[in-house]
Amino acid sequence: MIASPDLPAWAALLTALFVLLGAGLTLTGSLGLLRLRQFYERVHAPTLGTTLGTVFVLIASIICFSVLQTRPVVHEILIAVFITVTTPVSLILLVRAALFRDRVEGNARNFEWRAPSSERNVTSAPTEDRSS
Amino acid sequence: MKALLPFPLLSATLLAVWLVLNQTVSPGHILLGSALALLGGWTMTALEPARSRIRRPRAIGRLFVLVLADVVRSNIAVARIIFGVPRRSITSGFLDIPLELRNPYGLAVLACIITATPGTLWVGFDPARGILTLHILDLIDETTWIDTIKGRYERLLLEIFE
Image (cartoon, rainbow over all chains, first blue to last red; front, side, top):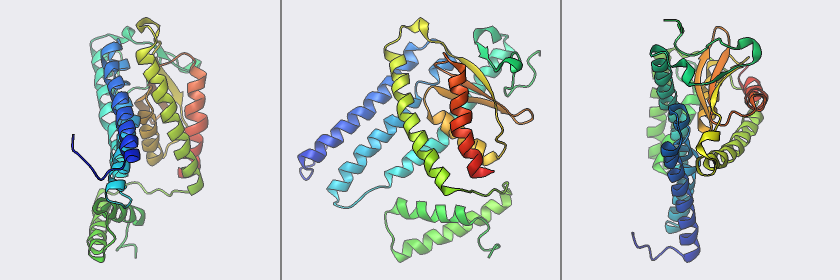
C-alpha cells in the first residue's frame, strides 16, 4: 500500500469503503461467470463490474485525490462515460457471435425465446436466415 | 459558420473533454482544445453522419436519473441472483419488443442503457419490422420488462430525439 500520511482518517475510511464496495461488486460479477449455466446468462455477470463496480472505485479515487490535492479532481467521470459508451459494442458482438453459432449448429432449442404473442417464433436477430 | 463548425455540439463536447482530461482552464489548453474540437468537427463531415436534433433537455435529465436508479437496482438484483438463488431456478430468455423509436442516435443511447443495466442485454434490432431482441437474465414477467423498456426509456427517448 502507498502510504499517504496527508490523507485524514475520514477520507481514508470513505476511500477504503468505496474501493471495497467496488471491488466486491466486480468480484461478484466475476463469480457470476462461474456460477451461471449458459453463455447468455454469463454475459450478464461482468456488467456488474463495468457499471456500479467501476462507479464505486471512481468515487473512491475522486475522494482520495480531491482531498490529497485540496481541489476537486473529477476527470474520473470521463472513465465512467467511456466505459458506458464502449461496453455495449463488445457485449453485443459477443452475444451476436454466440447466437450465430447456435443457429448454425442448430442449437436453437437451447434457449428459450419469448415474444409478444403475435411475434412468437419470428426471429428478429442479426442472422436473418434461420432455416439455413 | 456552418463550414467552420459543422457539429457544434460535438466540438463543444470535445473541448470539454480535453479540458477535463487536462484538468485545467488555462488559455493555452483552451486554444489547443479548440483546435482539436474544430478538427474533430471537420473529420465528422467526411463520415456524413445522419443529422439529428436533440430536444427537451429536461427529458435528458429525467432519463439520466431514471437510468441511474435502474442501474443501482438491477446491480443488486443480479448480485442476488448470482449469490442467493439456487442455479436451476434462474429463468433467463430472449424477449422481442416492438419499438417505435427509429432514430439511430436514440437507438444507440437505448443500446447503452440496456447494456449498462445488468440483467438486460441488447441482442439485435430489426429496423424493417422495428423489433428489438433482448436477452433477460430474470425473465419471470415479460410485461414488466416490456413496460420498462417501452414506457420508461422509449417514451423519453422519443421525446428527446423525435
